Length: 43
Image (cartoon, rainbow, N blue to C red; front, side, top):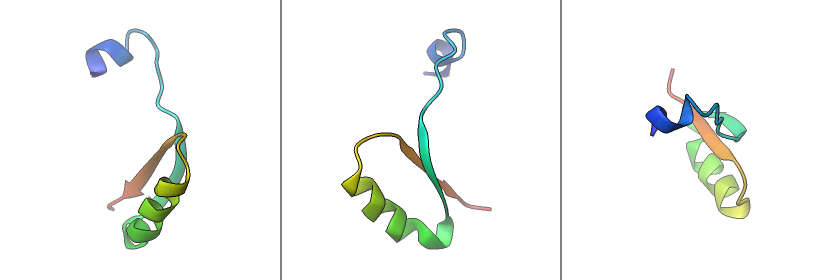
């Protein structure tokens, strides 16, 4: 997928960044919103 995304300068839409401890709340947020991506930080 990166072979397509990088040359075409396509960037994912990141809607929200959460800590790992907030993962459950992040998935609940994701189920209510259908636009953008959620990033869960591990470290």
